[in-house]
Amino acid sequence: MNKKRRNTGLIVFTAVIAVLTYCLLLRGDYSVFRYFQSRNENEKIKTDINELKTKIAVQQEKNEKLENRDPFEMEKKAREKGMVKENETVFKYEIEKEN
Image (cartoon, rainbow, N blue to C red; front, side, top):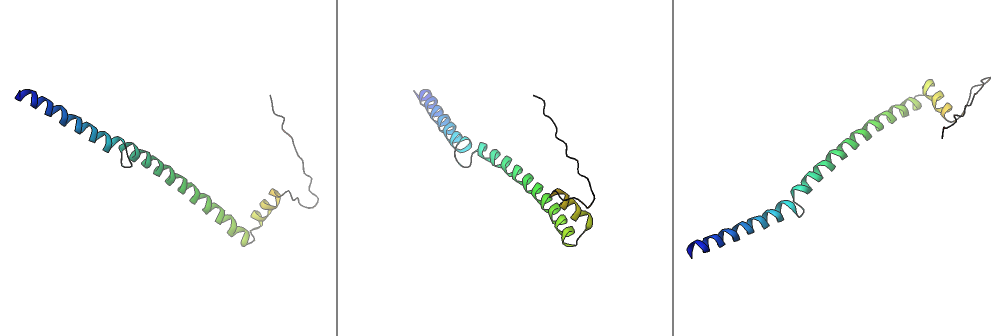
């Protein structure tokens, strides 16, 4: 009978440990899965932030050039808006898309 009681106690102890492990590690806000998911999201956000910082730096440089009236940057912006120089001929090409 003592051995049977010990086996039952061991089974109950193992079941309690299994349930606690499941609840703590696999479910809830502090689970292992949520931790790795949050870590991956954090890395992606850091990458996005670095890309945006680079874009901001490039745009600030362009803005400074335009504020300082850099002739090359001003001409580039004007051409992007469709402006042309006097006595200049503009050729427009249409590219046909293949089906």
